[in-house]
Length: 152
Image (tube, rainbow, N blue to C red; front, top):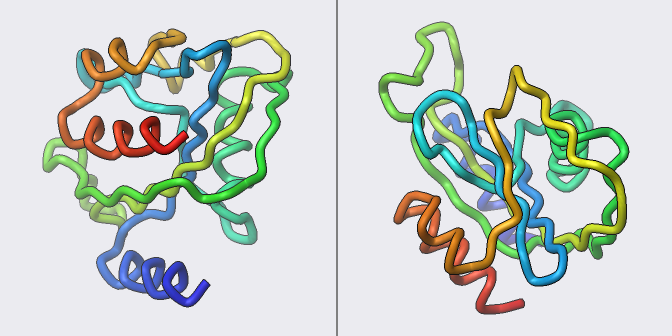
């Protein structure tokens, strides 16, 4: 608990946006979504945590907003990994207070519901094996994801 609070304090001090991510598994494959900002911008569903939400609550809300309100998942809400990064310069907005993101990942099992993408937020989605994920995501993101999937 102390380590988590300290980590979040450092992220706040660095002006990193709090972000929750869901690693959603279904039959050995994982849900990946593609952001429209650049080609092949694949990642797990994630989004900013709002005031009063836990990281898990923010991650689940974002999953449902971006991928369909009917999606049901099962999760122990246990933090499985953290990842910090700075936004690429071309995506930084001068009016924005955040310089990057502090992402906390949570594992979940798909239970039911249809994927219905919010086309204003996402370009595409797929269910991918770990080998397919490695081909789609950035090398830095893969280093985090690989550790998560190895510890499942």
